[in-house]
Length: 173
Image (cartoon, rainbow, N blue to C red; front, side, top):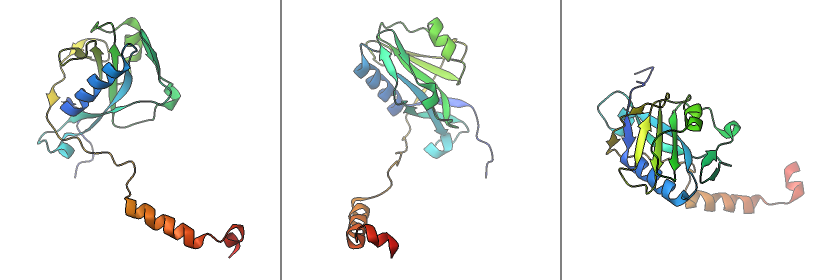
C-alpha cells in the first residue's frame, strides 16, 4: 500500500482535452476558465507512477468577457486533486498575459486554448509562464458519481415518505 502518490504529471486524458476545447469554443467570444484536477495513473490502469489530468472544475459564479475571466476564489474548494488551471484566449494568442501570470502561482500546469479551438490551438505552461510539454493520453476517464442512486431508490423513498406522511403530529409519535 502506498502512502504518498507521485507528483509527476504524466499528461492529460484525451477526453478531458476534448472537453476543454469544446467548452472554450462554446464560450466564444468570451473566455472560458476552469481548474484542472488529476487522478493517480494507476487508477487509470497505467502501469506508471504519476498523475493524469482527468477533470476540469468550473467554479459557480465565474464571470467572463472577451478579454478576461474572473473566478470567485472563495468558491474554489481546497482540492488535493488540483494541479493547475485552464482558460481560453478568444483572440487566439497562445501565450500568457501579465494577468495570467499573476494567477499561475497555484498549480503546476496551466493550459491556454485559443480560437479556433482545434487540436493545435492550445499550449501548456508551468507556474512561471514557461511553455512546457503536456502529453495527451488515451486513458479511460472514470465517471464521477455525484448522485449514487437509482430510480428504484427514488421510488422506494417516495413510497416510504407516503406511508409515513401522518402530517405534523407524526413527528411526535
